[in-house]
Structure formats: structure tokens, C-alpha cells
Amino acid sequence: MPEDTLKHARKELKRLQRMNENSGESSMLRTYLEWLTELPWSLDSPQPIDIAEARRVLDEDHFGLDKIKRRILEHLAVRKLKPEGKSPILCFVGPPGVGKTSLGQSIARATGMPFQRIALGGVHDEAEIRGHRRTYIGAMPGNVIHAVKRAGSRAAVLMLDEIDKLGAGGFHGDPSSALLEVLDPEQNSKFRDNYLGVDFDLSSVLFIATANQLDTIPGPLRDRMEIIQLPGYTEQEKLEIASRYLVSRQIGANGLVAEQVVLGEGVVPAIISDYTREAGVRNLEREIGNVMRHVAMRIAEEGPDRVAVNAGDLQAILGPRRFENEVAQRTATSGVATGLAWTPVGGDILFIEAAKVPGTGKLILTGQLGDVMKESAQAALTLARGHLEDTLERWDIHVHVPAGATPKDGPSAGVAMFTALVSLFRDRSVRPDVAMTGEISLRGLVLPIGGVKEKTLAALRAGIHTVMLPRRNEKDLVDVPADARERLRFVLLDTVEDALDVALGDEAFTDHPRQAAA
Image (cartoon, rainbow, N blue to C red; front, side, top):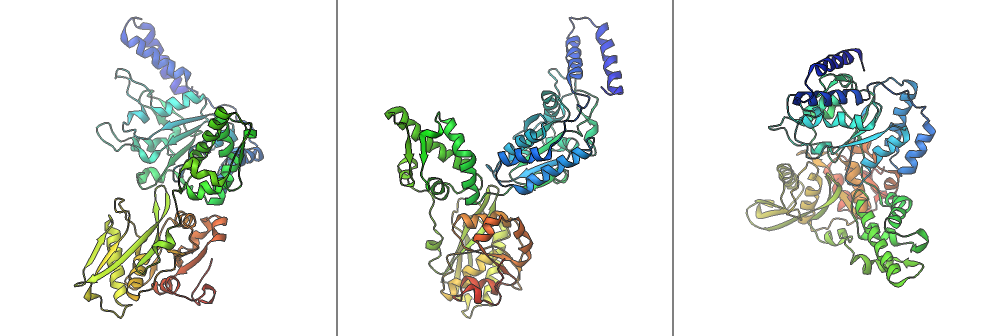
């Protein structure tokens, strides 16, 4: 123990010696001293760090995620050169099923550090983080000190799972505020748990937080962490992940061996495209598990040595296809445009439908739109008046975004709404292979938006070939996986006229003077 902690512990020990063994306070004090003596106060001699071995472990456990792996290897390199340095606070943000929690376990395996996980979902009591004061009956240290004790070392990997789902502050205090001291590299060397009442050094702990979205994490807490985004996977990446990890894992989980199962060449691609449309791979593994259970039942019931499954058998095993490419069907008529949306579970496509009926120029909005999207629709209508010869005052305009039971809001639907309105009044349908995102100004400029990577992957999943983005988002294309960049054509927009030329135009893309492909 540090000198001041040892001095405090000896003082409490003398108090215990003078107490009656049968008194209630005696047992509480004995428990407290046991906690002090069992905590790992001193830092273990650092293990030799092998960067090449760490890279091999990370590549073995996870496919892709090059940016995250590079950041972890950089941390290990710094730790190798300066073992007494402070550990960073990393926060992995991404949709469910992309491998955030398993990545923490891989980091622990690559570093040789013990791993502990703290589940923060629904925690609404400050004492869960900082512990109870010893004056209360049943007082205990908080989850952070508990995890360090279980790890048996101050140099451990502690995963704070679902940090965006902490309960809001209320009668029991605010747990997110209690985490500020834990996750501040400048303060956590003197973290004070209410139960211990002495400083404990957490600076050598490698904290890794996970979250589905950043919006619900309080600003001061977010400021203390290094945010690393984990977007969804492309279909090609899912295919690699399934062939390397998921299929073999489900074969073993269902009591089979590899020799008993023969999967046809198109089985996994068919499951990815027809039965799952998600950012992560959790549902994909679930559907592969369904196929393996079907094989296990056949072997257990009929006794063949091997069972072959082909793409044509999937309908009998998994039921009819759940997802179809409906973009071409939806956009076959005028007044329909395909937009791109960001959600906490990855990107998605959004259909914007416009219709006109004789009236007095009213704008009707349906589809559970939030305030921002309502304002975008009003701006799109005002802008459309300047581009159309037809007097819109003779018509009532109805803008509808299907899936009305789902609330929708965000500042990126302006271009799609404007295109749908112009398409309606010019009676020209929008090209079915084009999706668009971007906000508009009343001067007709296309303004930048967020979530480019997620929206791009959503377009790819939906069978879109051309994505229209604001030109000021060109810098975000470096985050899009190379596989997606090769399969998609990007059109960069300066003004809404650029969007109309591509979405409603018949000319070839290569001949268009304003076309900018990335």
C-alpha cells in the first residue's frame, strides 16, 4: 500500500484490537480491512509487449476494423516505450452486433492483461460507481473497485459496457457524473471510493467503453473519452466474417463437426442478402444457427453421415425471403425519391413520397416527422416554387414518409424532398438506382450532413449503385470501406440543380459536366 493508506489501515487495525469481537462494528471493520489488504495496490512488473504477436491476435479474432486495430497497436507501442504512462480511455461507438464487446476481450488477450466487464445499462445509483459510505449497513465498494479486485491487478482491461444507457440522475444521484472522476486521466490516479475512503490509483487501468450512440452520453463524460466509430459491415465483409468465424462457431454450438455439414457456394450470400439487413452480424449468426439446427435434426433423426445445404433449400429451412430490392418498384412513378437516414443501429434507406390534389397551396406532412424534417419539407417546397413553371398555389401538396409508426427526424432529407417535389410536377420518375442525402438552404445550396459511412453502407445493402452527397462531405469518403467505394458511384453536389441533373436526367453519367465521381 502507499504510505498514507498503510498509516490509515494500521489506525483502523488498532481500533479493531480494542473492540469487542461480538459487536456489529467489529465485523464491519474487519470486512473493511479485508478489502484494503486484498486490493492490488502495487503495480505488477510489466509483461514484455510483443507488437507482432498482438497484431496476430487482433487479426485472428476480428476481420477488418483496421483503424481500431492500428489505434490499439499504437497504445501498446507507447506502453512498451513508457510503461509508467497513463492509459487512454477508449469509447467504441457503433450499432449492435459489430463486435464492440468482443474487441475488448481481444485487446486483453493481445496485451496479456486481465479482463473484467462492468455492465452499465440501467444503472441509476451513484453508489454503483463510487461505493457506499461505511456508515450504512451493507455498505460495499463500487463496481470499479470490485472489478479491479476481481482482475487482481491494477494493469487490467475494464470494459464499461453500454455507457450510453446509464440511468438518468434522480433520487440516488447521477451515475454519469460519478464516472467523470473514473474516466479522467488527469484525476483517476487519485480515485476515491466512498467505502474505502482512501485514494486508489486507476491510471494504469485500460478503460474501454461501448455505446450504440453518442447523443445520450453527457457532454462532459464524452469529452474525457477518445471516440472510435465502428460502422456496419459491407456484404463482402459479412461473407468473410461468416466463413472465418460464424459458421464454424455454430457448427460446434449445435453438436456437429465440420465433416457433417456441406454448405453450398451461395448459401451464406443468400442469407446475408435475403434474410438479414443489419449493420452488424448478430442476426446473420442466428440464421446460420437455424440452418445448423436443421442439419443437426436431420443427422439425429435419419442418421446420414453428411448433410448438404444449398441456396434452394433456404426457403424450406428459414421461410420465405424477408427482404427484397423494392427501390425500383417504389421509384417507378413520379414524386418518389430515395433518401438515406442514420439510425442508432446503422444506416437505412428512406422513401419520400409527394402527391398533389387541387387546392389552395397547403402543405400536408404525414409519417411521424419531427420538427427538423417538417422544416426541411417547407424549405424544399419554397425552393421548388422557383424551379417550376406550374403555379403551386393551385395544388395542395402532400409529402409522406412511409413507416408512419416510426418517428423520423434529422437534418439530411432536404435534397430528397426537393427532388420528390420536382419529380412530381415534372412528371418524371427518379432513377431507381440513385439515393441521396443532404440538407438544403433557401438559396439552393446543398449543406453537409453526418453519418456518411453508415448511410453509404445502407445504400449498398439496398442495391443502390449511385449515392449523391454534399460536396463538403467529400472528406468523409475516406472512412467508407474500400469495397463499398469500388462498388458505388458517388456524385458530389454543390447545388440542388446538380441533384436534379442526375436524379431526373437521362444523360450518361460520364458525359455530365458537373459530375464528380470519387
